[in-house]
Image 1 (tube, helix red, strand yellow):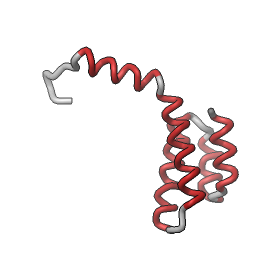
Image 2 (cartoon, one colour):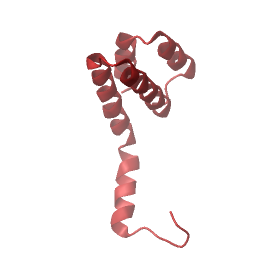
Image 3 (spheres, rainbow, N blue to C red):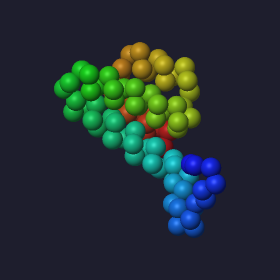
Image 4 (tube, rainbow, N blue to C red):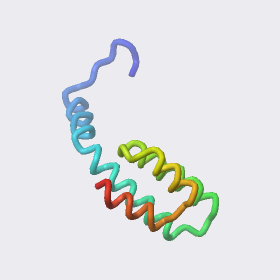
Length: 87
């Protein structure tokens, strides 16, 4: 945000609600990533989705060692199971 600018009351409310619902937003995003990976046929897109999944898991507070192991194996079943356990 630029120096000297302040949020309007409406913008403050939007930001507040975002942070209140951050966990459910992360859960939904991770679920969408799992679905897209299941349907994905393009390797480049799959690589991008796996990176997004790793970032989403880190933001959700999952164990770093488990995330890296999952990312190396690229097991969609384990990703779905971990996403279910987190949320």
